[in-house]
Length: 95
Image (cartoon, rainbow, N blue to C red; front, side, top):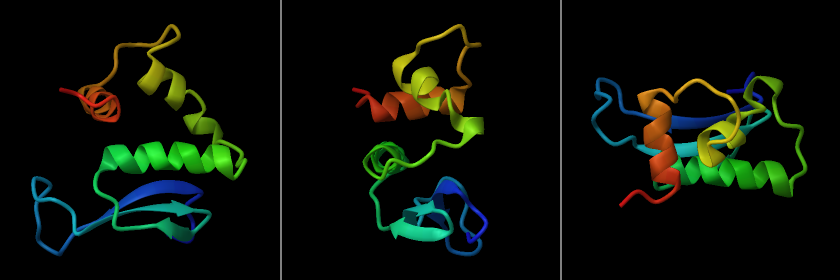
């Protein structure tokens, strides 16, 4: 975790599958866990965007179009992968 610039991390018990809910979901910024015990990946992503804004952090270049692509659906991008579509729907409060 110390080497990560920004990340949403899930802690799972050893041997658990991906279909099991994680034991903990947290946010790491510059190697420091700043939030933990979050309820979902969608809320963790939304909180990470808020932290970037509030703390006036430099957005990592490889992720610079994430907000426009995933949340806003703007730009001339390829269709979203199923995992990104699920994240987008979760962040937008899929019914």
